[in-house]
Length: 340
Image 1 (tube, rainbow, N blue to C red):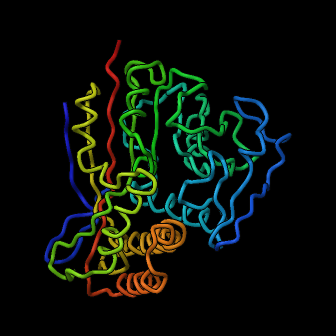
Image 2: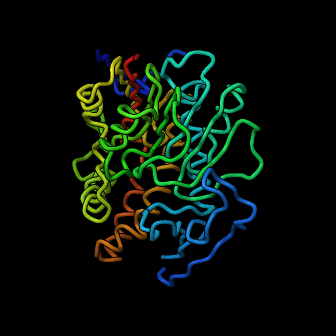
């Protein structure tokens, strides 16, 4: 069964979004971590795991040759923290939408990043064991007692615990090479308990507008249409995964598939104060992402640096224009593994 709900940070009405009623190149490999202090399910971290690659003025993880295109430095931490705050505001304090009940025993956060979501889930469910998994050991050392972080590639075979009640992805699926393989492991092995839930929260990178205020040559739109083929060719990522994800999950055998879509304002153009605040959050998150993609991915794709800089500048100027009422959809998709 599949049910969908489309809302926005709202619905367009007379051009106004209404609020919801109640989310370079000098390459060095270095390490900021002491392997003796950082234990995981696999034991102490090796230097290949804790190392970093510095390129284009940004820091990237060196695990598995360091080919992941998103940095793991302080600038990225700020973006992720702001993104986390944005989604909490969007969901009015909630961390998820799936009906997981009040007493889950084991929760896994796949692509946990700096770990804010996992730590807050540990505090929300003190009786649950919460595991965050990421390519980089960039999470805090001081954690709630029921929270752990491990370094692993979630597209490989999982060797850590199984039988999770809830598997969570946030801004992860658009940067995976094989989403179907990951979901297949969740569904057809003991990684997720029968009756357990999976939730995906991610951006569908397609800029829209409901009142014809967005020009055809809108720079943020051009940014996404430029970036998509680059990430597909260089890294194997599919930015459009969200478009038909519910149907794919249903075909694989998940049940009770639902989707909720929020139209996140791109900039502080809404009249409503709540939506204007969300738009301000998202503007900063989006521009920081544009700046990150303008480094390793677009440069390595062979785009002219002057062309890249022109696109970045035009995009920054465009999202400051409050006369353009543009938004980007954020999808929340959740589904259940059939009971035994």
